[in-house]
Image (cartoon, rainbow, N blue to C red; front, side, top):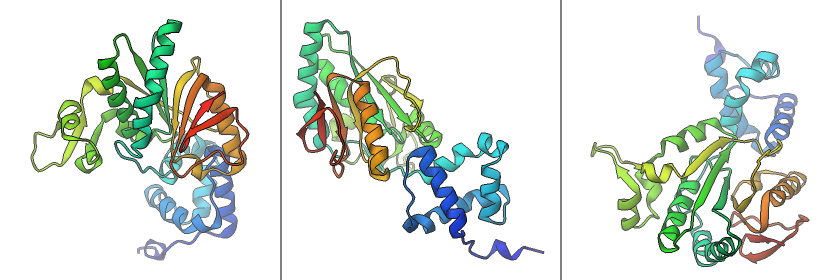
Length: 284
């Protein structure tokens, strides 16, 4: 006999939602107001089906067990995090980077005999942002003799990091990339029926990818000249944003730049930075 729960829409109790949402906020910093209850139910449902649980209460009990913490924490984080990105998203930032930041940094590094520019794509999702940065920095390096760079991409989701490492995307993802760059930096599928492209190896090789939870200590030995953390902090509450920005500032070299998403700002946040353009800040 098939259980009735196979067909019934499972509903999460307020008590279970509060318990799970608090845990998600503590683990990831992502705020889960009551308005997101239906969304959370929908996403967690897929894990219930896969693991064979009949209720959200059973799932949460398993999640909080020793075995669940080892085996289910990462899959749970993967399904509750939102990953929306594309190549050259909010392209004004890359124009500003090319026109102002890179010439300034290249000259400063030349005078100070620093070997390379260090860039961090924090919350890199499926890789479009760090690979866009790789394109922009590679093109600048062609024009500025001796300029070199490193790019680090980090994310809390192992699923998106796996996609980023492969560098394979639907062709719609490169709609903002001009034809010259498409030919230079992307490979089309040999199968004409597959509308996909792959980032060329020489571009992928310039990007290092790492798992990172913003709620934990960064533990980076190096500091960065530029940090991109765009459309990430909108999911966090103000105290979490304050802590995160403070950590970013400690991770920037003097005069380094912090890029946020176009709808984000540092309003209400105490940080040793000045706003130099829309959603772009410079460490004082």
